[in-house]
Image (cartoon, rainbow, N blue to C red; front, side, top):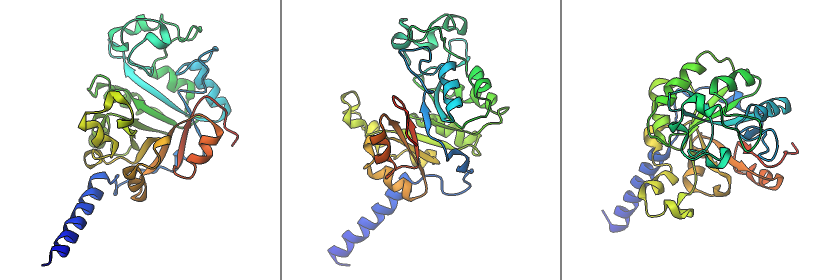
Length: 274
């Protein structure tokens, strides 16, 4: 066999291996069509300078009233109650030192969001507020790398009649759903990590950027930062059948550009025209 043929065989083998690594779920897919037809309000239809701050019940009510789907974040309090809050730290939104998981629910409920009268809601309160009226994209926050939050939230969702899917930056949450709830649409959140200095030099983040963990998690969708639409693995996964979700769109111009590359759209900071 000639040298050129040897090289060609190696290239083909590596290409097939790459496709196998980044492929989404190919068989036994749950129905994703109920997720279509709406734009998704990031942390609700919020305004951190008003009485409907992010991830608050007023922001979720506003999104429901406007007919938008909702993206929200869930993590556990110190006493193991799922609450809806984005950051690990309470400083930005509540002006309190420490992390969410260092406070019991009773303590968290005393904290005000962004100087408003709104407080940190429990996940159960959010489900009751939305009541199946619009689809939900539920992001698990795994700053503490354990899947107890998946177990507890899944139990609550087992009684919920509305449309929802789950997503996470950490592959552990997707692995939990692949094993325990394969009937639920699951998504890998991602971005081109090397663009941020804090992630540079860590090869794990480079692997995540190119969706190599898909071999273990087999997501149904890839939620990628919209400005990184050209990422090769994101595009390949979409070609192989992954639903492609854009986060986070912050203008009408960004939305129109993202429509060329993505299927679903998460927005904040403006009201989409269509």
